[in-house]
Amino acid sequence: MDVSSGADRLERARSTLEGLPLFSRDATGLTDEEAWAIAAEVDRRLLSRGRQRTGYKLGWTSAAMREALGIDTPNFGSLWDDMATTGTLALSTLRHPKAEPEFAFRADQALSGAGIGAADVMRSGRWAVALEVVDPRWESYDFTWLDNTADGSSAAAYALGPFVEVDVAPEDLSLTMTWGGERRSGGGRRSGDGRAAMGSPAEAVAYLLAELTHRGTRLEAGMIVLTGGITAPVDLRPGLEVDVSSPQLGSCTLVCT
Image (cartoon, rainbow, N blue to C red):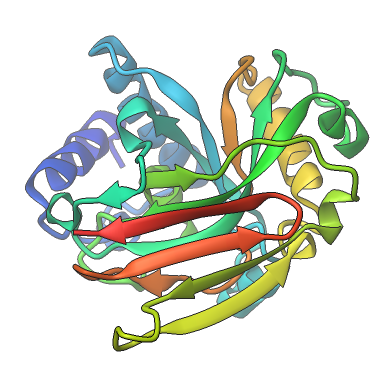
């Protein structure tokens, strides 16, 4: 697939909220190299327009999810300054969003190098709970890993709790996502721990650092990493309130309008 054309189509779909036919079903096909190149081209265009990259989000870090969908590896996409929310999300700017509870890492210093491990990550930043909003640009949800990678891993928005130092192993961090509430219909509750993110959210960050190093870049000080969904996501709708809390990290809330 032509990289420039793919980036054009994704940007148009993002601005119009019209569903995009899957690239993986295009007559020309879609390779791993093309998927990553399309995502990189969209990022290059955003940077050229003055947008600020605030970090990265990981996708498919759950081994159970990858196995269920026949996917071999995680992927990642960029986070941008306009994706951060203060707790309120306007759904009119999104097509079919879902929220996932995650553990977020914020780097205290610039990090790079394929040899950085989970222990190095733990010494180099702080942690928070997060709600990541994914909003695939595709016309249907039967997209492949290749489509998702080209689409920047469906990054759309995120909410964060306070970043704190932790004194437990990152795989032992736990969280619970609740939505709806007693007076709202369609409420629910899901819980999980850090093992769902590549065995440990610190291992997930180390994986990202190796991938960034391979691409000749790094995680800058102050950047955020969303380490992947810990539970299944919840569909967002106007009026829905979603909360995620952790006994080790605190909480954050997202109100949909």
